[in-house]
Amino acid sequence: MLQRLPAKMWTLCLQAALMATLARGSVSLRDNLVGRSQTSYNPSELSESKFLEYSNLSDKLHLREALGNIMIPRVVGSANHSIVRQYLVQSLRDLKWDVEVDSFHDHAPIMGKLHFHNIIARLNPKAERFLVLACHYDSKYMPGVEFLGATDSAVPCAMLLNLAYVLQDQLDSLKESKLSLMLLFFDGEEAFEEWGPKDSIYGARHLAKRWHHEGKLDSIDMLVLLDLLGAPDPAFYSFFENTESWYMRLQSVETRLAKFELLERYASSGIAQRDPTRYFQSQAMRSSFIEDDHIPFLRRNVPVLHLIPVPFPSVWHTPDDNESVIDYAATDNLALIIRLFTLEYLLGAK
Ligand SMILES: *[C@@H]1O[C@H](CO)[C@@H](O)[C@H](O)[C@H]1NC(C)=O
Ligand SMILES: *[C@@H]1O[C@H](CO)[C@@H](O)[C@H](O)[C@H]1NC(C)=O
Ligand SMILES: *[C@@H]1O[C@H](CO)[C@@H](O)[C@H](O)[C@H]1NC(C)=O
Ligand SMILES: [Zn+2]
Image (cartoon, rainbow, N blue to C red):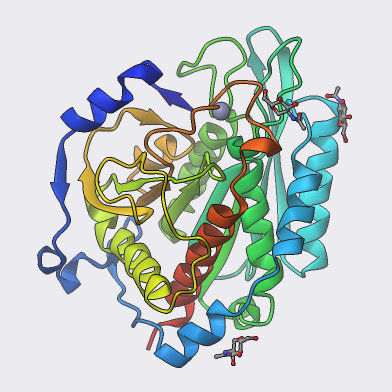
């Protein structure tokens, strides 16, 4: 993904960015709208017993195994890229997800004609509405360098696969329900030569356009896009006003977990500008300077939650983005927050 500003300007940018403190009172029930048709949806918070029961569900070993399978060089068109794709598809099919591979071709600088494959996994392919969790599984083409893209985006993809694995029993009812869960693994997020409208987010552009023509975008309640996760001390902000109440749910899950002391080594080295003891900052950042797979959906009015840290990990788009930067405590904590958010969204109804 792209930041339009040089890395060194992040601090300045953060200070100058249009930031406003989130105020609980400012979000009314009316704001819990989802989908392009603005359906009102307001699932209740998980009860304390459910919250604790679900918090107990984790499999850190599985997360590391999944990561090991994904974190190899996986440039679009390479043999390793197909290996990772097949691994994702097979793992989800083994967990009884309905998996569609959306294949298409496009032309890319340097590479020429390339075949791309988005992976779309649904618990109930016939559902009317979906919460969509997404990441990109391709890695950046860097000639002469073994680029592993640990945070970009092996960790986010491993988190999604791990969520499907860990919550298989809890999510089982969603194979029949009208509101269900979709996992989306985008292909071709990275640019090959230079980031631009025609050289980047190949998979997301293709899929948003296709679903637009097929009238399927209306079935997306919200696209939750994970990117650049795994490095220590991530700081997230609310980027979009129409999903702010959902962002605040993530915050409240984090606060609840912290209260029960269920977050591991929950401390910070202090890179966050505002509140270094939490990941989900109490600020909104309304400058859309981060381009990523959500853009073609956002432009078509799909509500988006973008879980990308600001600033980006310091190893972003360097050969150092490998296993040595992964902070497993932060990774497990984030994965837990996302699992609980997902369960609250899907099962907190009534
Ligand atoms: C969660 O796990 C802990 C440790 O295994 C156990 O003591 C506790 O009873 C569990 N809590 C729930 C709500 O399942
Ligand atoms: C493919 O992945 C393996 C690890 O499974 C790695 O050793 C190898 O270098 C990769 N090949 C390329 C061309 O990157
Ligand atoms: C990861 O990157 C660091 C810093 O560039 C390097 O020293 C280390 O050898 C790399 N480790 C692996 C497993 O590639
Ligand atoms: Zn990238």
